[in-house]
Length: 541
Image 1: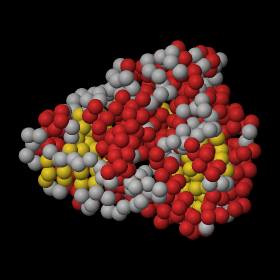
Image 2 (image 1 turned 60 degrees about the vertical axis):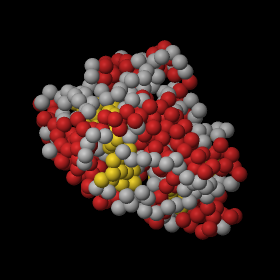
Image 3 (image 1 turned 45 degrees about the vertical axis):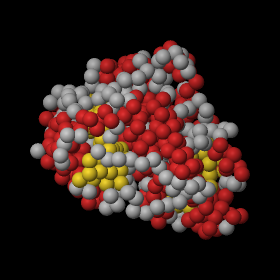
Image 4 (image 1 turned 180 degrees about the horizontal axis):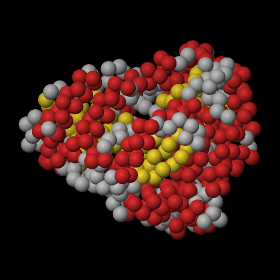
């Protein structure tokens, strides 16, 4: 720990890790300069905004989403919403929830060049300009970005209300306690001084001079890293209902930090708890129990797992304001686990690979007015199946959708995991259907399962799926969009961007030798998902 706090890159790979440790001191820095957050909160309250909409991806959106779902609407402050999807229907659904004239928009992008926040900004800036006029539109926007970024220049040119800066030595997934998390927290009315003061308790508990056995971050990181090296490389996150979304933030931190060079931890979030016989011997379970509002059913299920011999880490979260402590504990733990596993815990090489593939496709659309033609290797039951040449060869002999899915799922063995990657609207109905698919596979094949909605997972768990251990069997689900939405100043639409992201994602999975299959549904997504669910049920019968 002394070496960690000193910034010794040899703890990991001896590359540039020492340049990415600004998160270690960020709470102290924030508390020392708290006025920018307290004055923002007072200003927003005085202005009387009805809603706030955060426009971001990955490290810029996941912490604000945790805070939104944990604290809800706070009296006297705007209700926070988060947009991290290019799905046209999802964008329109969020737009329908807000009053454009009375919404404060937070454009959040560390690099300032990430595709999604930029096109979100273009879309909503145009919509708000229509509603309030050119003179007032800039006053409805705030930027959170690193100094000197493209987004800073955009915000200055468009006369944004405020620009708040990140810290260049903090990567996106370690940025929760920086302005990327705390500016939205202040806007939605969280008592940020209280939140950060609680967090400081964990910072001190994880300090350089605290003995390892008493250091909560070290103990957790040692368990995760050592377990991963012994084959228990899936961390199943169980969170009390009151802090349930914490798992979405932890997914990115663990997957993007540790999943690379064929090693790493695969986080499993939102998987329904089952009886012990549904699990293999490749997991560690982390139970984050909200002491102020525990769930007795979870308690009983976790106790049953322990009695069956499964390793369970118990973490007591006193009350919602203690979430900041968990942000820091898990950041330390992830850095420690990365050192034990033997990887650079601060880069994300395979995330960039997907972005490059997406840019190629959107550039082609800009030049030619269409994406490249594709040919399915199977069409039936209203579903088209696509794969690269290697995966097509392994699957092409199936005569029905169920037969092909049976062959695909049979490629998974002990220690593997099954991933559902849904490039469809993220809503309750679609999530229920995808959860049904993952749980059918989990309960039948005893596999760990993961579920991600695209493109948001590209900025989090996508790194582990492509760069981590080659133990995933992937089912990507795409569909025709029921509505289309233009991107101002571009030829491509949001639907085209989403399609390009899905194809780029699949191309990198294939290039990395992953077992991957893409199922394309028509415009009636509900009917298509029902057919897919039925076929998977037949395949596993």
